[in-house]
Length: 182
Image 1: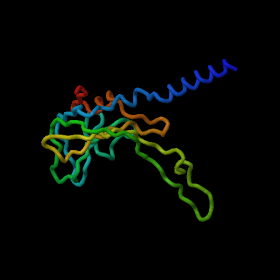
Image 2 (image 1 turned 90 degrees about the horizontal axis):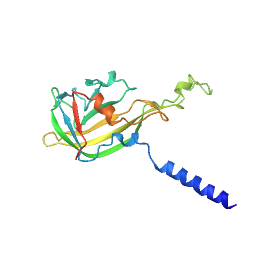
Image 3 (image 1 turned 60 degrees about the vertical axis):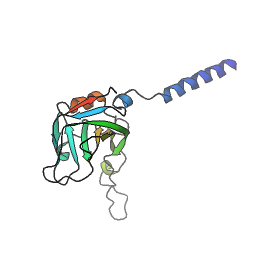
Image 4 (image 1 turned 45 degrees about the vertical axis):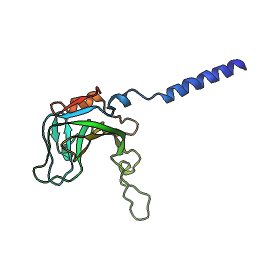
């Protein structure tokens, strides 16, 4: 009886330890407040838009993003007018949030009073998500810039991951310089 108690306590301790430790990957891209993100090149905002996206070292339009690869986007407070840009400047990270956003959740079309569905694909049973970091920013000159959001590749809930610092640096090469020393 004593051996079973010892084994049970040891097993419970191992389980609690395993459950309490988060994978290192989830903290890899978490820049601490005080870290800096330097924009190296001007980013043009499209008229009527408030975000500009970066992927594979270049600026891309939202509709041409490869959602299955990591990407980042700067966000401003006000919709852009013709010719608005985010100018090169050093931004300080003031706050960090992380989470996930639902990418696909479609209800199936229902025909008359039947239970027939057009396709299992539209049943909402296997929705995709993007996991993200929101890095809230502060700058001396450009107070209109709110944050830089970086997203991991779109995947199922069980496979989706946050972007790593290495992935963020790779996708933003020649555009951003990230300094985590503070």
